[in-house]
Figure 1 (cartoon, rainbow, N blue to C red):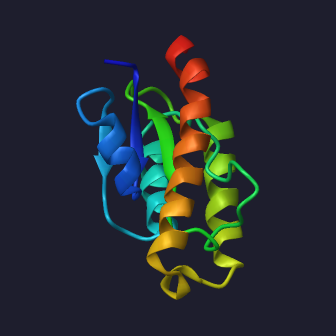
Figure 2: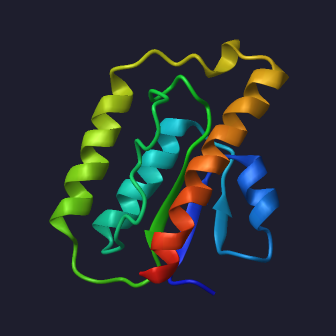
Figure 3: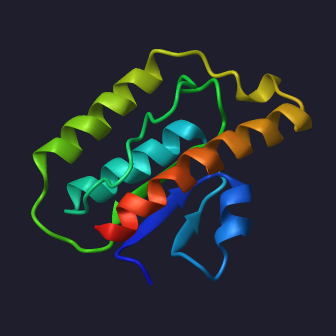
Length: 126
């Protein structure tokens, strides 16, 4: 397995990567996924994908997948700064996830999957 794991609330990601990558699927909010990643960063894990990747604003999409290292090291200042800024940014937006129908939710799942998939090459090389 790779030297990273994926934190996600996206069922499409969990389904596509089942048995292929280390995935922790938790059906929680976008903000909760950010906070889970923040907890990992403070434990010494490094962010390997940006928590605000893509042009979709926090809380406009209900789904987020974030790659973090599986090697625990010293807390990295850059990962702390990035994840803290992402959590703060998320708090500035209105939560719209309950207003979307099933088709829109599937679209947001695909957007999150595509962003995550594009990060595999660099994460696999890490």
